[in-house]
Image 1: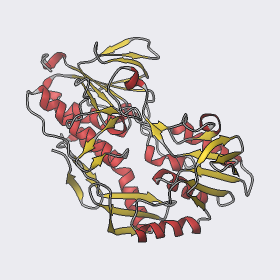
Image 2: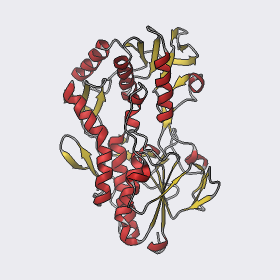
Image 3: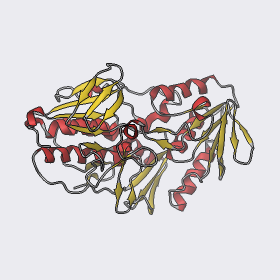
Image 4: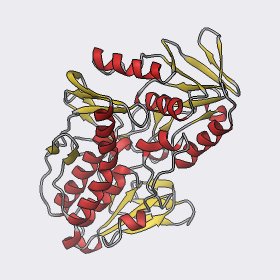
Length: 396
């Protein structure tokens, strides 16, 4: 980064939780440097990924327009999709405008989507929670089903458990089946896992663990042993992949398409590219970061500070992060919050019931509060919102 500040163009590609926070942080931190910041996203509305299970059951949520969120920051918003990326020439080909957008520094924040290619039939016959239109398609389907119709939720990770719970609570007339290789709540401690499974049973969710779906059909799913499980609607929540854009551009990526980064979250193959959130393969001393909002926003906060430091000719300290909890909603009035070690290993303490539901809602709402704070203050890199203690240092 040797060019003058005044003509230094920073492009943030993707305006999900991480990309939007990074753009706001950059605007605040580089305001005195005269840089230009452009935020590119296909939709002008923020997609709250952690609420997709609510939209999928027909709930109406508030909409937050990106131009309104960034108003007054000096950020230029471009509503478009990136068709191609050339990290050597440092430009992006926009799809709808069919023109090139040149950058000096790129923040790559294109999130993940459900893996619809590995298992046959997923793309054609299953519903995903990738974005609002996808979740609304599932909501419309559920509303059309007759009483007693079977609904299969594939995958018992956090997304699958939350979706199955939400469908069972919102549509008690339907027969909800949760199918997975793993036991629901397998990342929780024994007592928290038992509570979660009792809650699913109270809601009428049928749990089948230790099974593998090998094919999705129009009205059923096929298991590895050949058994057909009837399904009037199949929701696919297992397996996620990143956009192929980075791999096609020649950046070094991992097995699921995430950009491999160094300990300052810069691409190991193209240092002018900083990757954050679900788009980055981030290794810590304890292992790889998971795709969660809890870790995504800290990567954005760190990167905003890192780019500002680089522009000022300062050295960077490595990104450091550790988890502290896993919040899971079980409908609107119940939940489980498992407190953890930094590597997400569960400890003995957990919340359940209404307190956990309130905690989860606080976590879900915290990005919007963080955006408002980021417009007013240059939040130090790694200072993240935590409902239990307020703020916590998690990165240098």
